[in-house]
Image (spheres, rainbow, N blue to C red):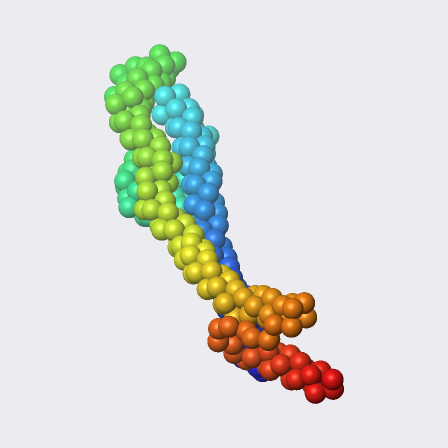
Length: 270
């Protein structure tokens, strides 16, 4: 490969390689940025779904507990346990999938307390004052009234406090994704800079290469051709000796020597 062709080929290959390298780096970084964005959005959506599942479970359990404690309907015992089981399953799933498990500590503690409270109530109930001195429907009525009164007081003073605490913990968990967005957003910002930086560097380097390549073409190709063309034109028009000023290299030098040989051949033929 001759000198000029080699320089031209190397110049174009350098530009192509630089474009390919910067494009691949940007593609990798943009893919990583897209993946992080998808993970954040997916985690946020999953967080909301699990929080909604917990709230539904706690609400169902609360309704069943109202019927059991306030109205004394024992048919709701299974629903009370089912609500707690459903809540614990959702909590276990959240613990397995959570990006930051620190937000689940208070929720797990509140769930355990509600489980213990519910199990103790269903196992032992609430004591009712004896009414042995009375008999018949009046005694049954007094027992029912006493149980309803104690159940309502237990629900309002004990269970409802723990229920509100658990609801607050679930709401904190629901908003925990927003709290963890800050470090992830900072990482995404860094990845965005990483995706753009190779393009900017490649752009600067490419501009420098193109300017150097343009200078090379002008100095070693365009300018010699213009000088030879001008000198040849003067020779043909005015028989001015063919002289090309400046240093020529490679193909331009070979072209000049061939033109001189041709002119000498024409002179000899005459």
